[in-house]
Image (cartoon, rainbow, N blue to C red; front, side, top):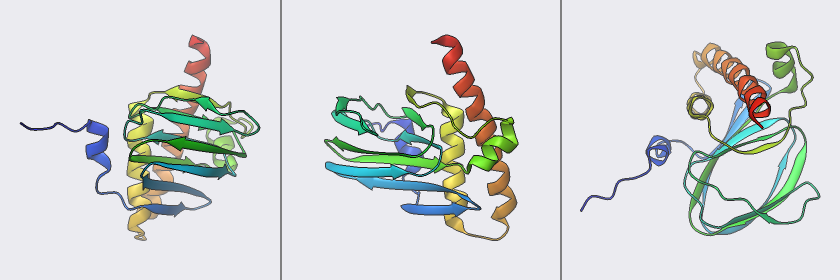
Length: 169
């Protein structure tokens, strides 16, 4: 019998782990087994879990630990500087795009602070994040225009997602 993988999992198998600098922004991609991790975001960040995580608890900022289910493709937006702790059971993979606040302002005309949102699904932002990380990890000079354009497109689309999230909630 053939075991079918989740489509999101198939799309990230080739990605290089680590941080890819994209001008004054960056992407980060990691795989991890069952663990507890501290994190710190210094800039507005959009991220996605790429493999389903059955049990996941997290504390963001000064929050207490709470259950935060993570299905493959589930995303989050962290509006600005934030630190926290999370733990989960089973292997996981996740990607984050840390966006320079000046790009948010350039693209949207808004202050760089974004609202914090957990649990959204947007396949366009996810695919852009994966493509952006892959291009940044390749580190070829010809990728600079592509990276710059993709980062601005991701940011513009993310602003639509943020606006739509609050229109429907």
